[in-house]
Length: 418
Image (cartoon, rainbow, N blue to C red; front, side, top):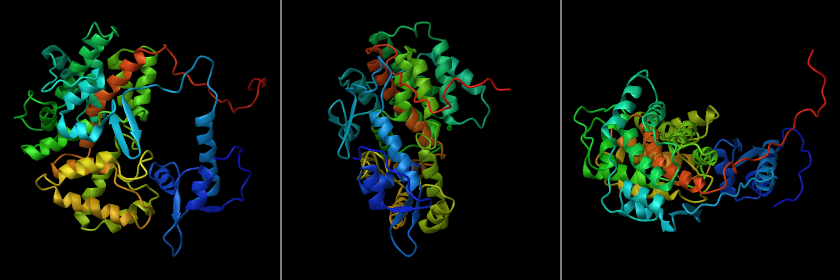
């Protein structure tokens, strides 16, 4: 890692992948992960297999990374967030020290949520929402325009449920856990059903299915949906989770903290990424070949959705676990083949692995769900993780999530504008 700021570079100079990795102090795979997340742009080497990068853009990212890792904080702040919830290490991730993919393979979403919240497993637990809470949330959601996005409906449902709970300002662990066990099923119940014969009982995945697909669920598909929820419960300090912890640091109640998370996941680089991957897969299925679809993405200057992750140099373990289950889902083979085609075709340009967004896209495309279904699954799943982080933050010093700004504007005093 460099200790000094790099000097100026000639305008238009381009770097090889190796040079960009050295300047950033990372592996080559991480450079491509930056590309996949829209933090760097790349161009294919004419007649070659490598990529080149704008030197000024790379150096700007390197400076930003140094500021974020070594910048000073205001007195009394603590941006090293202590957590006992999730550890990401060497292309694996763990919930309270237990391999998360193993948990998701053996336990339901509700059981994993309880493990995150309390460190205890409660076999067979299901979450049930009171009728009054559901009625208030449904009325609010039904008042939205028909074209409203899933996150619009979930945010409104969360606010409506909060307004119906006079005890929402009680931030004790017992009260917050009670809120969590009611809020999550309320969010699901507030979504408009696709099928009139949907069921509002049983495991949460079963109830959510009727809000996402008009098909009758088979056992393998329901298992894949439930496992997807469990895999997505938490992923350390993702952008939405950080927003939740900031809200909890200010002692916002649990409904408001969840609303903060819901406001962040709508971005195309976070919760909405699976929808982009879903649309891409549908184009591949329609054309029968990933090459023209990938070419169109690259020609438009867009990153290829569903590929690469900045925290995993290798394969995203969530994608690996979900793809394995999707092999057993009826009618999933065409979408699985399309996903494999995307990965193989894109590898000619950037050697990136599939991430969980691509696996979610295969699930939603195979089960007759709309492109927005992945975002809904992500939001419902992550609500449990947000609650876990809010609970942790309530036990920390209030208002500690307060970094200092680095002012780069004109130095005062400046004359009044005339």
